[in-house]
Image 1 (cartoon, rainbow, N blue to C red):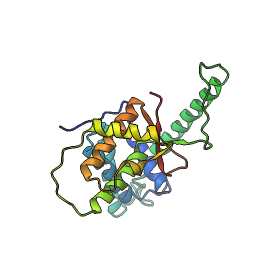
Image 2: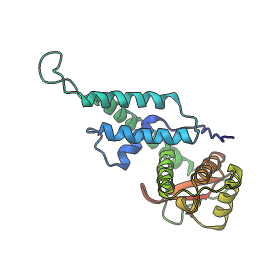
Image 3: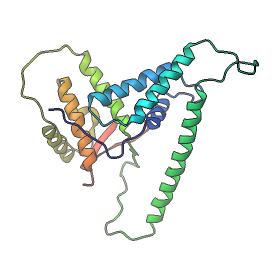
Amino acid sequence: MVYQVKLPAFEGPLDLLVHLIRVNEIDIYDIPIARITDEYFQYLTLLHELDLDVAGEFLVMAATLVYIKSRMLLPAEPAADGEGVEDDPRTPLVDMLLEYERFRSAAEALSGREDQQRQFFFRSSPLEVPADGGTLEVSLFDLLGAFRDVLTRVSDRPVLELVLRPVTTAERMVAILDKVATEVSVGFASLFPPTADRWVVIVTFLALLELLRQGAVRVQQRAPFGEIVIGRGVA
């Protein structure tokens, strides 16, 4: 039986593209479409393998990237007015990403003001300040990127066929909760035993997503694109 996780606030395809651009330190005005398209499809493959509920807009963006990639492979055509060459096929995508970034920056600014306003009111419990000087929230795509690295290490190992009792998602959820209960911070990679096979790795990742959905754990980074750590949640 395949265990499915459906996230209530699934991040969209523009979030994924922005994530890929930042991770690869790409100039948004000069996006290497072939490279970004390949990486985008790698993430879609992961989402499909994990049976996550992927919105149709992800597939629409995939088709858009393929179209732009095909246009980039063709020789540049003269403009309709006969002067110069046709516009860069990446321009509409760049404009879309820039507009999205502006809206997201505005939303983050408003959210910051809301957090500041809350400080003027008394709470029933004191505010907790991280002892390590602050941490950064981790997006779903940060998690998927770390998960892809783990899967790559698993795929590189020789395959040893053994008949074992299948590991369940519930068992891995309990194991993760036990780990975060006994350790101050748990590194993402430590959730996956070095000898674990591909099935155990996938089930463990699904268990982590379910715990995140329930609020039983939280994931953070101490620096952009740094090590992902898991801690206790608020649920």
